[in-house]
Length: 337
Image 1: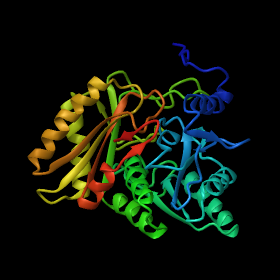
Image 2 (image 1 turned 135 degrees about the vertical axis):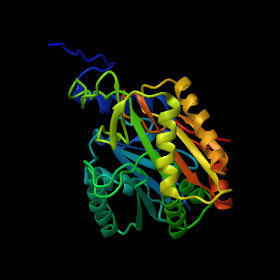
Image 3 (image 1 turned 120 degrees about the horizontal axis):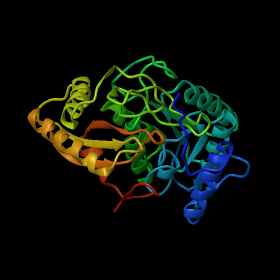
């Protein structure tokens, strides 16, 4: 039997999230602050007076999601759970309380049962303390519904666009209802689908989380390795791009001439070279459907540890969303001038 040996730049697997957070605050001491005795990071200059606060969180292993998007024009704080595990309700409550400056808090939640349940409990506790809290649930994964960890569709890379648009609206001084409206507008107009070329390896397990043959790929995979829609033989990049893009566009059902923002997102172990190859075909497909690309993002925005693979996100935009996506942002993982 072939023995798989885990090779990772870690110490004790039980300490990896704690040490990651220490490393993040050491890298950005003028931007990020860790709440004592928690796995919560917040803006070092927060809470910001006169602004609705945006908070999120979820399992670690998806970096730069979540704390990488803390900063001007995006998030005010994020809670980090253990790898692929939701933060506790207590952590979410600490997060909400630390970020509220009196103008309310919007919780942006990816649609995973643990995140939804724990955030809902935290929101109830925060409201008992007098904090005004609203929430939106992101469910942009068009691949499957009611999969492992979810009731309904999963929340994946489209979540970053929710952070960006809602964060920009909050930075303009909009009230909580307007910030929530913008967040929901993105949710209603975005779709994503991903593929895996390899499994990821979690620090705790030390071996692949699922079996995928050397000549196999999985289409519609989840960011925790949840099953997708189809396991098939390896195929050229163009065919993969066509499969993912067609599924997203069929779900969105956009009119000819519609402007879109696209994201080709790496899962953690895919070179930029390959992501740009996917983007090449993606843009061709949009043109063939009569769609116009307003902006195209390519990079690692929401990963799955060391999984090889990618996801494609398409978001329909109008003048309001274009203004918000173009608005300034200054975070460790994303900056817009």
